[in-house]
Amino acid sequence: MSGTSLDGVDALLVDFAAEQPRIRAACHTPYPPELRAELLELSHASHPELHRLAQLDVMLGELYAAGVRRLLDEAGAAAADIRAIGSHGQTVRHHPHGPHPYTLQLGDPNIIAERTGITTVADFRRRDIAAGGQGAPLVPAFHAALFRHPDHARVILNLGGIANITVLPHQAQVPVTGFDTGPGNALLDGWSARHCGTPYDAAGRWAGGGTSSPRLLQRLLDEPYFALPPPKSTGRELFNLAWLDARLDGTETPQDVQATLLELTAASVARAVAEYAAGAREVLACGGGVYNSALMARLAVLLGPRALLSTAELGVDPQAVEAMAFAWLARETLAGRPGNLPAVTGAAHPVMLGGIYRGRL
Ligand SMILES: Nc1ncnc2c1ncn2[C@@H]1O[C@H](COP(=O)(O)OP(=O)(O)O)[C@@H](O)[C@H]1O
Ligand SMILES: [Mg+2]
Image (cartoon, rainbow, N blue to C red; front, side, top):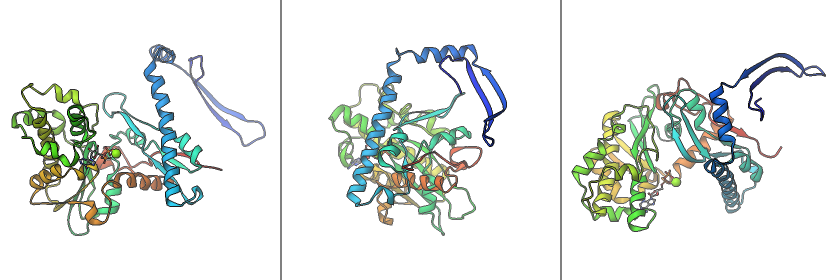
């Protein structure tokens, strides 16, 4: 327990077996002065970002709960029929490196469990980070459960804001690997929002009408992240428009930049597959980037002679794979099974992911 006086940590070993609680041991750890000063500073109301963060956490929790209720309405299902909700939350920071690695997802699971009455599993990533991992990607275990082929190696390519691959060897005893390859749609979306006012470049048509610049592409590919060996994960902290702006020389037309960004996603994915999944015979793509046909066409060329398919061709809606993965991870957690793959995240060992927020009693 740490109280408002900010004096430190009271640790207590209590035995409740008898009528009167019995203290078996007590241990007080005072806060180091620098930590106390920082905590005091942060507790002042003058930190608007912290207030915004806390409020967004609540607002997202309400929105997720409303989304679940609408879903149940549409499915004609009752809350009592649902074993659990797996809620990934919205990532606002991902810093898996340095002396105090962390990742932060918003969307208060207390609110989801309270509003829906359904047990909610959330905060999947932080236990993996606590075990020394990147906290990402977490979808590979699900990819393995769903898509492993008994006779040949496969790659699952998730084209979200960030792109990640899962390498599925056909031999069950060979560990599954995977990592974030770099930008997926995030830069394409950002650039198209800035120049066309659209949230994304539909079917990659705008990019498709431009010409990729080899010089700019090289400058973008010089980013050290691409050459880092896995385990590795990344996010908007690195791949954002400020990162791109710093690499433009001002002579490129916006449309050619978009074409180059498309090439960047395709080239970085192809490089990752060539380096870490050379033996794979097919690449199954999922995530919203599957609907960017210009991107898929470039990927098909660069990944060749491997076949590039959408998971739709295996009967799984590509836009649903990630959400399905977190429903599956929630199931694993409730069953007491680990959900991370140490060979993917770099964690010291498998861990059960997420906190469990019980529904109605
Ligand atoms: N018709 C389309 N044309 C091009 N891109 C699309 C299309 N539909 C979806 N997308 C892309 O997919 C993204 C959403 O993909 P999603 O898998 O949900 O990403 P995330 O997991 O990062 O939320 C959009 O931001 C957009 O870039
Ligand atoms: Mg999405």
